[in-house]
Image (cartoon, rainbow, N blue to C red; front, top):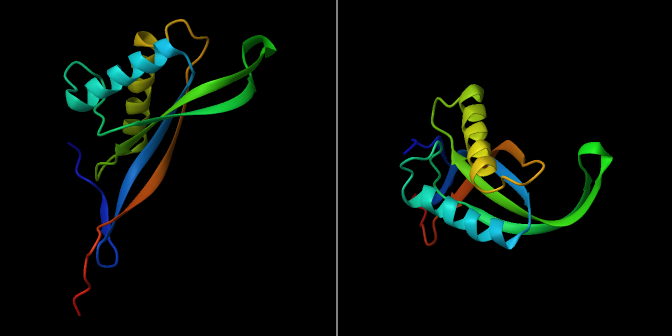
Length: 137
């Protein structure tokens, strides 16, 4: 498990460095169940996976975009959000490799019939609060 880049803030507050990755797929029942099982397996037992995940969330959005050949797509998409915990020395090439590995696994195991799989990633800061933490002066 990666060591967290962490900044202690006020009492009960901790800020952690993560990289947010979002994968976009057309919403199809086959994708949803396969994807959930695939990601859950990586979280519970990453043996055999190219990427280690601490967790994920899945939600859906409606949208319109242009695909290959200028084809217009209007559809509901699944968005899979993964927060990759940033190790203290994680650099850009390491992040690119993790995103590439995750994209390959999803494209080759889940979305094999899709034209494209889109992945967005960006650095993000997560602030954690612990309830009922008293300030001691």
